[in-house]
Amino acid sequence: MIKTGDISRHIHEHLSGRSRELHIEDVRIGLGYVGVLLEADRPGLSALLRNDLPPGCGTFNKAGTLAGSAASELLDLLVSGRNPLEKALGLATANAMICPDIAEEPEKDSIALMKLSTADRVAMVGYFGPLVERIKKTGANLHIIEKDPNRMEIPSRKEIDSILEKCSVAIITATSILNNTIEEVLNGLGNPRHVTIMGPSTPMFGEAFAGTPVTHLGGSAILHPRKIMQIISEGGGTPNMRPFLRFIDRRIKCVKRPEET
Image 1 (tube, rainbow, N blue to C red):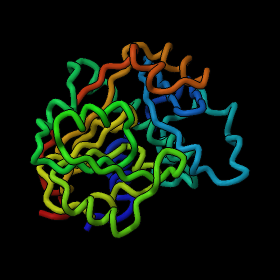
Image 2: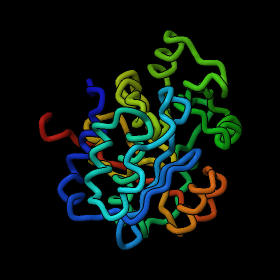
Image 3: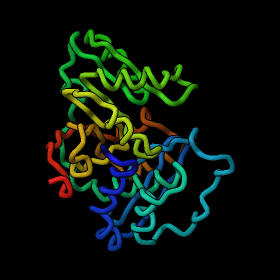
Image 4: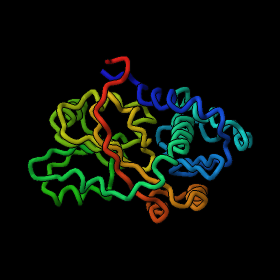
C-alpha cells in the first residue's frame, strides 16, 4: 500500500538539497494556475484547486517576501502546505527545479501512446474535457471520476472502487497530488496495462512513482516562461497557455523504492 503523501514526500526528498541553493525570481497566483520562476528563467506550473480552498483563504500571507528567497521556502510547502494554494506553490517550485531535465524532450501525444481499443476500460480520474471525445472515438469504454459537482455527477464510493479495480487504462490528473488523493487512487487500481499521470502540473520525475502502478508521466515543457507567467497573472488557463507549452510523455521504469528492495 502506498501511504498518503508518499509521492509528495519523495519529490521533496529528492529536490530539497538543491532547493537551498536556488532562488525565487517571481511568483504568480492566478485563477486557475500558480507559476514559480526560479533564477535563470526556470519556470514551473501547478494547477490551483480553488474549489478546495477553505473559507477565508483569500490571500497569501507571505506575499511581497518571496522574490529573492530560497526555493526551499516554497518547496517545503509541497509536504507541509495546509491548503491547496500552499501545496500548489510547492508543486510549481518542484516543477521549476525539474524543468531543465525535460526542456529538450519532443512533443508526444499521451492518448495515442495508449493505443486504445474497444477492449479497453478507461478510468479518467479528473475531468479532461478535450480528451473525452477522442477516447470515445476509439471505442474504449470510458468512466470518469470527478470531485467537482459543478462539472458532473459524482460517482458513489462503490462505483469509484469498481471503476478503478476493473480499468485497463487509467488517466489520473496531477492535481490529485495537491489534494492528497493520488495514493488512494493508485491503491485502488486492479491490474491496468497503462497508467498515466497527466496535466501541466505533472512532475516529470519518475523516481517519485517507483513502486506504484504508474507507467507514464504526461506533462508539459514551458517554451516561453515570461509569457506563461503573464497568462497566469491575467487569469488564464490551459487553452491560453497551450501555444507556449510542449506536451510530453515519458515512460517510467517499474522499479522498487530502496526501502522495498
